[in-house]
Amino acid sequence: MKIGLDILGGDYAPKSTILGAIAAQKELSEDQRIVLFGNEQETKQLIAEAGGDPALFDYVHAPDTIGMGEHPTKAITQKPNSSITKGFEALKNKEIDSFASAGNTGAMLVGSMFSVKTIPGVMRPAIAAIVPKLKSGTGLLLDVGANADCKPEMLNQFAILGSLFSEYVYGVSNPKVGLLNIGEEEEKGNLLTTSTYPILKQNTKINFVGNAEGRDLFSDCADVYVCDGYTGNVVLKLAETFYAVTLKKGFKDDFFDRFNYERYGGSPILGVNAPVLIGHGISTPEAIKNMVLLSKDMVESGIIDKIKSAFN
Amino acid sequence: MKIGLDILGGDYAPKSTILGAIAAQKELSEDQRIVLFGNEQETKQLIAEAGGDPALFDYVHAPDTIGMGEHPTKAITQKPNSSITKGFEALKNKEIDSFASAGNTGAMLVGSMFSVKTIPGVMRPAIAAIVPKLKSGTGLLLDVGANADCKPEMLNQFAILGSLFSEYVYGVSNPKVGLLNIGEEEEKGNLLTTSTYPILKQNTKINFVGNAEGRDLFSDCADVYVCDGYTGNVVLKLAETFYAVTLKKGFKDDFFDRFNYERYGGSPILGVNAPVLIGHGISTPEAIKNMVLLSKDMVESGIIDKIKSAFN
Image (cartoon, rainbow over all chains, first blue to last red; front, top):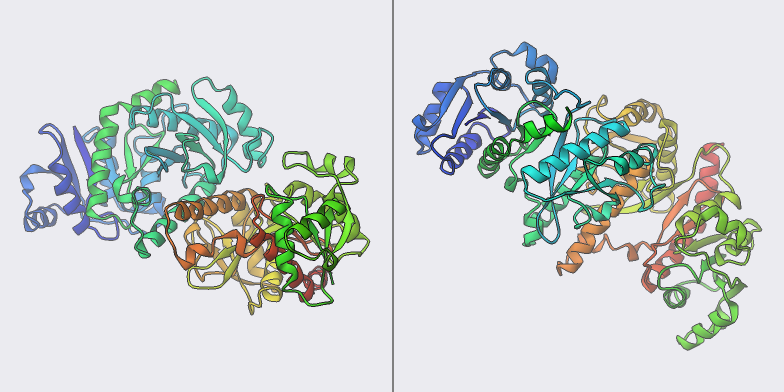
């Protein structure tokens, strides 16, 4: 297995990505290799300086960086030597089995759709975020930003994508799907959710449990919450803020700790033909390590083939 | 001044509403009277039993209750003797200056639109929720549920309504308006927000400061946050859940304390021809007390006339 990692992505790159890669490598077996995309010589030097062994990694020389503020499509096409462009090239050519970066989210999304492409039958890929449950375990919220405007059928597809991820990557049996909404009853909601409800209800591929309200997001109400990318993104950033406030206030608690994005490492782009993960811009070494390990889990789970079969 | 209060509204009514009314009355001046809508004899008896003086209140006999699950429009028309229907009748006839209830939100919304009616020029009234700021002070989020689907011009009107409330009821000078969105740049967002941005930018009646993300909601970024009622409702319920979790975990902190809805008492319906307040279903006596006091503040502020002038 070859796990691709962008060494130049993220606010604290390359230091944070190097340290994360070294930590992740220690948890991999011999046949699992991390392929680093960045300036090859510099990367090797930084690994050695950090006490790591450069020989334990593979490299693809990619000296150029796509900045956080750059226009995704322009950057992808105009920077052929950037770590993200090189990463997707390798992913497309099956030189790597997965690709992860804490860099420009838009470039990761566009790059995945340009290179490995959307799985036939999937209208639009979605970005899934992991949300902790109050009791224990993890739920999934999607979409959190890939599609600001959604049609009912897209939400229906997100439900399938999320269910497969929950089942095969997180091992949740028959995952429950909730529609993020503003009331429990079927007729409650906006145009999108009231149109989506009957479609989800009739979908035999998922275990739809009905509407879930903002207050249910951390309950055992569902394992997969679907909503449009605008709402999901607002919700995600609000939740992150609450976590940040509890940290700042010095509140220590297992539940709040589980809001720490570092634990999950990254958000998968679901619906493209390969495991692709986006890390938080502020990714620490711990986050990078867990993003690499989640990449490995995604490859091992065979999630892409499961999605392909479901949309066949 | 006559402040109308529904004695039968809320999960803990009439006990909670009676105790709240008694507490509020102590903070009013002689010319400010609370008018109680409910079973008159029972209400007087309960006030006496709770150690209050029934003579300090006015009464309108309304023995019927609209339940939390009842269909708003049907209930309003089919229950002429319900406390909410009687309340709006009195409000329409100017026998009271404001009306507040912790009962059926939909019935309160429909009731206000049927009785005192929407202010000419206002497309749709909005429900505003009070959000605490991390540093100090209070922000306003609207709409939080009256309008699940919104047009750009509605969000523009919410910005005006919220600004007037912030300025005249909370005393915020030149309140800043933020558009709840998923990116800082003007071109970011969904169809609704990208269409709303240029309208807000050109609106000379407000102090538009641009997009605000989920993470900005508790910052000093803005005093008034506008969004569609679906998103606002999801956000509000999520925020309430976080507050509930910190309470449950025993975290004591001024910022989290300020999430306590009891402090604010109720959410104003803005855009109708009289001050109308909706309380949380689980309203405690403290919440009821503060809802009565906020009713008084709204009447004193002359907010309705300010709104009428703005939309004239």
